[in-house]
Length: 65
Image (cartoon, rainbow, N blue to C red; front, side):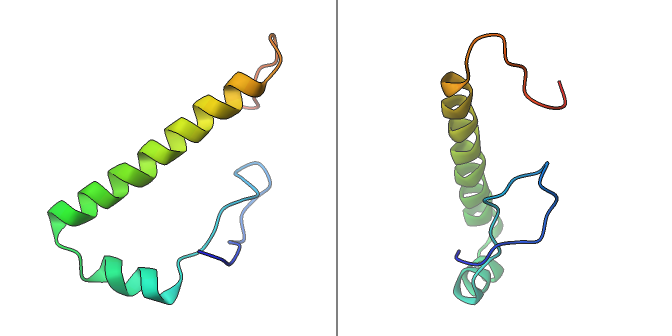
């Protein structure tokens, strides 16, 4: 995943689009494999969120809260 996706700055600045190879692999996944793949992506996002929140100074509330 190398290209940047056009999104609002509020969403994220590091979002990426799927490379053609990734798309082809996902397209041919069965349901169980796709669920495991997506759970992995979700888990990475949760871990990144936890890590980012630990770096924030106390008393700072993220936007949207």
